[in-house]
Length: 62
Image (cartoon, rainbow, N blue to C red):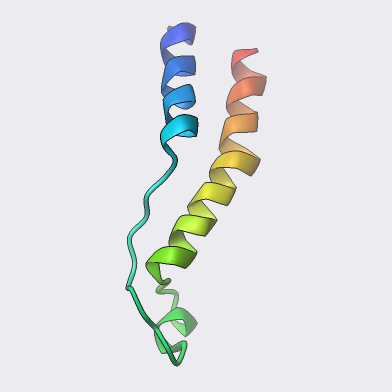
């Protein structure tokens, strides 16, 4: 089981993350209400993956 879980995390690390959102919000109106552009959502998801998820997975899986 540990090996299978490690393989899943390794695949995510290789492939990266995707995130939805709107393509443009030139006046920042949507973002002010919690709606992110696709680019910002992808950056946040990638940062969370590399700063939180993957280090936690390494610590748990040894």
